[in-house]
Image (cartoon, rainbow, N blue to C red; front, side, top):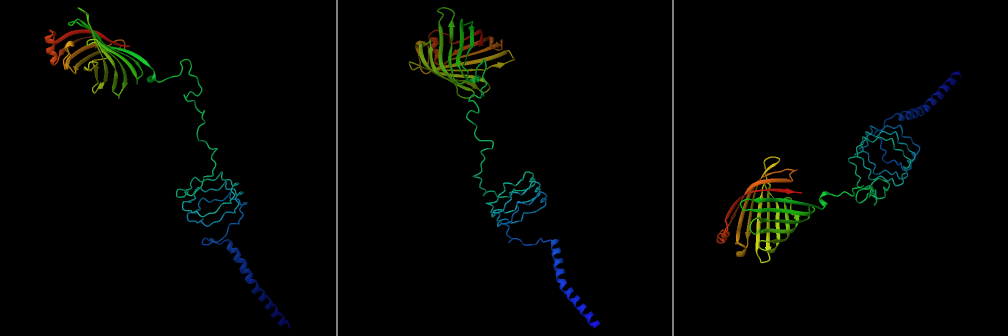
Length: 384
């Protein structure tokens, strides 16, 4: 009996151990799963649409070394996710590379992110150069409060004064728009051999773009009948280009005692040669052409040598006034001037020479007039 009782206890103990072994293996397997690395787990079919992450705290998560470049988010449905309570303020995403991520199929119409705090997120190292934003719709965004847009009508006054008065001198204007005037006497001298006074002056009034000009040149005899021969014109002056100005107006010639219509061009040729060309159409059909050129050879700040040449031509003969067709007269003069008073006053001495050309030489011989003449001259030129 004693031996039989011992055999029964051993049998019961063996059965208990056999039944406990599966439970121990199950418990040990569950604990080992907690420490198992599952990088190759496939969770692509998992549904996260109803997950509630509103109470999750991501503030201490470090995602700086995460590589999401090959992740496919195209089939993720996040329409019902509530992220309003999530705190991302301490997340560090500076080293995340999202250049290859595809978000084109993500559905987030009902996502509520109004309570998310991204103020402290560091995204300075994120590379988004390859992201495609072409399908983003920003038409409903309200940017009315942003700086920019059109200025109000009264932001600045039309004259840019901004309400500040001009003071005692009034509104300033550009110098080129002010009407000015000037007088230039380029020749007022005496010819000793011819016993006559030569003069040439020009007075104008207007701006740099439009002027009214009065010009006269001629000579006054100081012996016998003291005859005055002059050609005076009143014209409109306007620049034609950088170096050339145009003139058009009316003129009167006392030598012919006839009025004329005048047109001319005045300017500076290369090498600073002052040039003028004027044409006159008289009432009897006669056409007169005057050409002139002058150069200032400056010796120093005050002494200047000025050579000058003038040429005149007519379209037809006028025996009553000793005029022949073609080039009629050539006149030259060389003057040595000394400029004073800021170059506004310049006395001069010089020598002049005049000669008849073409048929005018024969005409003068028949009238017992000299064909060639030369004379010492002295005078002054000035402007103001």
